[in-house]
Structure formats: structure tokens, C-alpha cells
Image (cartoon, rainbow, N blue to C red; front, side):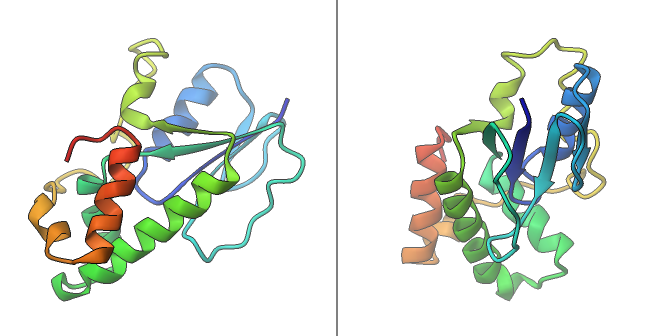
Amino acid sequence: MKILVLGAPFSGLRCMFNMLKLAGYDVGFEKPGKDGMVRTTLFADEFYINGYARVYHIVSNPLLAIPALSKFLKRKEHQLFMTVDDWVKTNNRLRSLSDETARIENIKNDWPSEMFRPKKFSKFAIGIKPMPISKLQEMGDLGMAAVKLATSYGYEL
């Protein structure tokens, strides 16, 4: 059974990839493996879900993921609106394509502790300070869309 694991950048996909590899799955990161693939994507990227038995969507706390994505894209503070828009569009698209959505923070409940190492594998996530919820609230409809989406995943912002 081939699986496809998708997520926006900084959603814990490198952690998920490493956990699957340690569990014995032959998955590729950004390229297919015998058992499937783990792939990070933004909403406008083209990719195919045909040929996969299950498609999973991994998310992480947007108050950490959004600033990390903004830093990676080298966006300035005044461009945060664009990053929030990217995050919302990407996660809405991936949710609609996936069989299941899971929070990376909850994966630890289902995996042995020696395999669960969130953020350890990301050089960009280290040192990222959580974005205050007020930043999203100040963005009007877009910010509230991000809050609503994050809440639907179970985050208490």
C-alpha cells in the first residue's frame, strides 16, 4: 500500500519522514519510494495523488509554522499577510485532497518516543518565536480564516 504524506512547509514533514524511515517504510522525501512519499508543498504546486492508497495531510501549530515559512521565504514583517494567505490556501487545498489530517504534535501519542523528534530535523524551525495571535486578529478576514482553520485542526489559539 503506497502512502502520500503532504503538508505545508514547516508542518513537521521532515520529522514524519524520519519516523516512517525508522519504522521501516521505504518512503522518499520529495521523491517517490517503494512505499510512498512525503512531500512539502505550497498551494500552487502541481503534484499527483493518483496511485496512492492513502493520502495524509500533516499540520503543525500555525503560530510557529507561519513565522518559519516567512523567514524561509525571506519575507519582511510587512509581508506576513502573504505568508498567512499561503498557509491558509495550502492547508485548505491539502485538506480537500487528503483522506485524513493529523497534527504532528499528536503523532507522538501513536509512535514510540525514540522515534518522535519534532523540529529536530529542521534547521529553520530552531529559534523561531511563536507569532502572537494578535497578528492574525489584526489581519481581518484572512487572519480569522487562519484562526478558524487552525481551530478546526484542534489548536487552541
